[in-house]
Length: 425
Image (cartoon, rainbow, N blue to C red; front, side, top):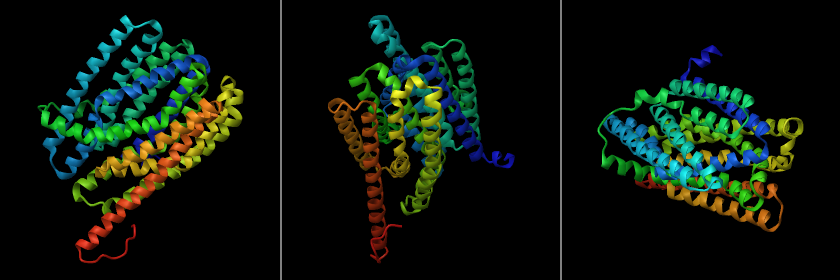
């Protein structure tokens, strides 16, 4: 075991898994101590910080592709400019977010300002966390990234202790806010002071915005059920739905971990050779790892929570148990759709990726609104919409990937004077 931990990727994976476990415990303790009503308010604050990331215009995503891409091509000056320009852009945005939070707190009614102001402050911390994490990941310093995860988890453990002593929304907010800022310590060495460039910023935004639109749409695909629950059923039912959102977060654990390790490899490989065929073995590895890591975790989570944790420890959340079980069915196809997403982002095919996500999102909304708003099925209906949307998304990802590889294979054979068979590697 100690020998494995000397490997940077294993060390990072261990830190990430530990952080995910602590985050899960943090949410579990918060759900127990605060109850469905307060957790519904927390979910609303979280949605503000999640959806507010659209205002970054994809700068973080552009940097995340540019840094490994130009490193693969040997252009280290452009790597430094990308890092410095992105930091300056995000610093300006965070200033605007904090000003907006102060304005919301001072001017808006308590009911609105009570969730909008903390949501904007949490958004700033989320921006800093995303920038720090993507920066260190892009440099492929996985040991440093592992220490980042361990520090974040340590802060969250302290927050759990504070939450048990002072169980209120402010303690929950403070713990999450401070944990999101932990990455600054481990990424400051890479925050170079090269001159910023408007040309670099335009390139970063033009590259990153399509990637971020995909990410935003995917966030909508996996969170629009909460908006439907909030609109039709109210804040307390959204609190009950915490079990389903936790289950979906569990399903995203492995794809997130694998993506953080494999996406820089995909970008560097493509930057070096500019050939789609060279990415096929890596894409297969991504999808295989996603499934191998997600399916057992989902099965264990279902058994432990459905039969033991919820009835014994979280009995207030029993109305959300069926929705949780339905969401876990997505373990069969969510890892597949997410795995092919890294490929599309790497090769610049965000348009087809966006089309697939939009199709899944529309199915999610249509099924969710029909079941919850018209058929009055409650929380299971919202979860069913998400599962239906993710199924359509995954199927379209598979079909699109095969079509792209088939066209590239045929084009390469024609160029070499051998049309061959239209087979996919």
